[in-house]
Structures are given as structure tokens and as C-alpha cells.
Length: 89
Image (cartoon, rainbow, N blue to C red; front, side, top):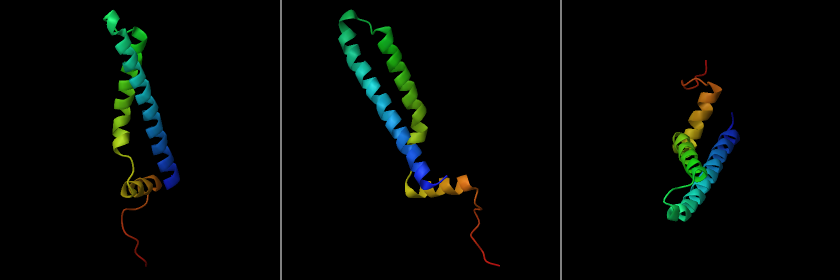
């Protein structure tokens, strides 16, 4: 795995989470409209519940979004490089 692939995966996760967040916001706005009925429609509640669950599921990964040292560590782990410094013989 190279740095471009790692950053691409991270950007994809960020984009996915942003879309989920937009769905959540729209469902929440629609639920305000349901206020007069004193109950949120089942469809909207499902979108809200699914969105919250997806955002929570992505939180751990989002917290690990790369700074350069983290990318270096992931590259090292993915290539199974030795943690010992190079020593010439």
C-alpha cells in the first residue's frame, strides 16, 4: 500500500461520512415538520438511526486520519518492514 492509496481511502471515508451526515441533517429537518403529528415518521426515524450508527462506526477510523507520521507508520506496517534500523554489514 502506498501513500496515495492510504490518502485515497481516507478521503473516501471522509466523503462517505459527510454524505451520511447530510442525510441525517435532512431527516432531522423533516422530523421537525412531523412535530405537529407528535411522532416522527418511521422512514425518517430509520434514516436517523442508520445515519447515527454509520457515523459512530466510522468514528474510530476518522480519528486515525493521517498526519504524515501516521501515514509512515501505516506504510511501514503494510510493507512488514523491520522496526530495526538499517545496518550495513
